[in-house]
Length: 338
Image: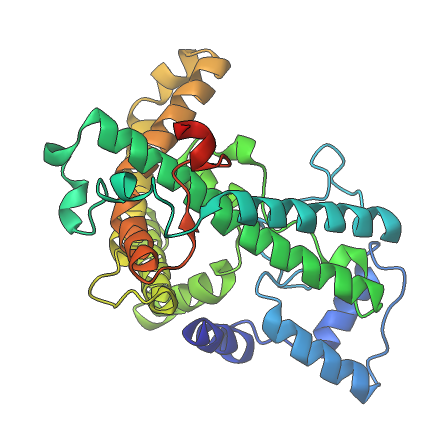
């Protein structure tokens, strides 16, 4: 995360040119705020400056990213009151703890070795040559558990911090919009990464990519530069996740994070090509069928691309004797194999 903070600092200081005076001017024009903070109080300036360094999505600032989920997508302007917000936050934290408990399994589970033996930490996992029906099923079970655990960890920590800040009245409820979009939006790779998944890394990465492409290289706006922007953005995200994998004990040469994120940039490019070339045909297909095809496409693409990143992490956790994503989902292995 240290390199993400470097990118974040570059954006704040050199690219977005943030200032407290600009924040106050924006708040005065916004009808969402009940009060406008004084621009002359040095303490407020200090707190705002510290908070902005951790506000990666620039929530409730003039520099807020576009893809911040609404509290209620059917009521875009809805802001929950304090007690409703705290109640929902507690529910999210408790739900996340339950997921973290039930979707993880101890490494010494007696039924686990037969599942672990089907996982490969090699890049060759991307090749269909070694696929079997059993391996695909086991791989999909690990993938679902990993996704649930990853999402629950982020959701739980985010809501816990939100509860603390709102209880202490450091922030208002409007300062803590949902961290994730709706899973119903996961019918294309572009919507998975642009809407449904968290957007914490978006601003620090894309702003630096933009300055490289459009200010340093002076590329004109167009399909080529947008495609290059997409590839570099996912490549940078992959590098950040390679460094994060070190925390799991996975070395940089073993990590498949870079492969995973680069493959997804290519997947989005493929989606765009299909949408551009087959737009007339797509529009003739029933909306429900379009959504179904989209969900199947996303699921299959993740099933193909995720193992190159997830398997080294899972195998490392297993070798270290630590809890790892469960291929039994939320069930106990003893209840399945009894």
